[in-house]
Length: 228
Ligand SMILES: Nc1ncnc2c1ncn2[C@@H]1O[C@H](COP(=O)(O)OP(=O)(O)OP(=O)(O)O)[C@@H](O)[C@H]1O
Ligand SMILES: [Mg+2]
Image (cartoon, rainbow, N blue to C red; front, side, top):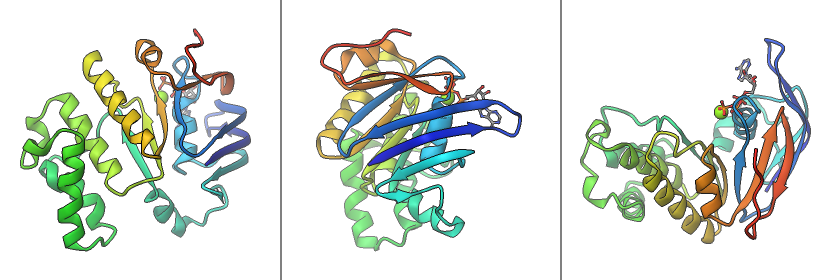
């Protein structure tokens, strides 16, 4: 599903964010990405969603070489992904329902389908009762679940999350990852960056550690886990 082959990223400032980075993630995997601040985790995510291009190397997502993707094709590629950020990025003047429906409206999904899918996905993330609320009237965990609903409503085959639990308390973080694990069981591939080692320990998923722009450990679960 994802393959990084000898990928390097040097930013304009001269910073070497990724150095000969190699990684393969198969369809249906759940991968935690950990590592110290500045290690290159967000750079990896940005390359994966084609927000940045690598300086060298090849990146394949769903069998497609996304480095060579033409600029006008990028929005279509992005729509095959679900992306969740630490800062939620909800639209403040839209209620919960519209924040989620918006993701479908921009892709010309028929109204009838929107009216079916949005309540279903809000139910899935436990927010059926909050459809008419504005983001500012929700708790951090609720806002994060709206962001998750929006990322999932297009039925992406790949869900990418950069510290999705960075702004919420540990109990809610656990619930979010529990929910992601359920979604993963239904076939969605998940790549999640996190700083929370307790969280990683609670779930038996693959753990990739990035340091100085390289994969320094890759633990396929079964209880083991790598300390920074
Ligand atoms: N747009 C940019 N321009 C220049 N340098 C950048 C840019 N983005 C990141 N960097 C640098 O690249 C390196 C890797 O940054 P990155 O954001 O990938 O780290 P990270 O592992 O996500 O860290 P954190 O855990 O703090 O989020 C850092 O040295 C950072 O300063
Ligand atoms: Mg980061």
